[in-house]
Length: 325
Image 1: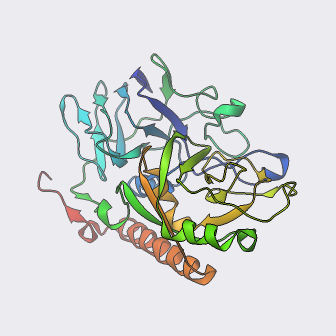
Image 2 (image 1 turned 180 degrees about the vertical axis):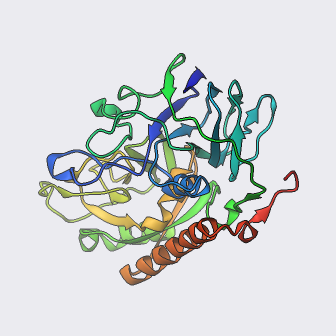
């Protein structure tokens, strides 16, 4: 009962919702970069926090050696199942011997292949997520390679005739406005730098991975703070400004503490937008209050809860129906 990796894609790893409650020991949270797409995949299969394959920029080719059910979410990788176009954002019945091919992303950057019951790699510190730098979790602590055999549990093949309108949840724009709250050291930045941060655009450099995104702007940001700030807790979405004046957005695999001044914090509801950006994308920032950030996140969670309720109560009429049934 396995999945065979025929081609690994550019960078494919096993991820779930992350590794919590270990940050005091320096162990990062990690987990899916675009947690919204990941969670929708889980909801479509009516399960929680099971290990899925996160694919980046170029997708893998996989052979399923057992019957199962999958759901593909996130960026569009032109998936083919046995040579035929494979729909996304809905459960797909897979017969043993089927081959799934994913090409380069035509929008967005990251996709998720959720499998019924998840990929059965060991749980390490409460999670199956891959943390490459520590060679922790996932499949032998690394990205997938050709020839890997991923253990799964066979599932009854079922069909469905519904899918989720991803446009209601996910943005794949290459020019995004990201909402932030002011960071701990916001007041220490010069007025000119604050103005630049909020009124000009930044370009996402090629130096972007699961740990952080380096941004570029012709005008560097400056502050009047002491250079030897004491390191303190940082998290997914924290925007630090190193001595170069070019901001860094910390992403899912970020360290647990940092000592650079923090100009802002990306609101949680907008982290999926960031996760779907490819290098050279354009980013603008706008400040919202903490209360607004909370309300936006609550609304996003209510939408997910509504999907879950409809599925749990056998109401596929809640979803858009597929013409191919």
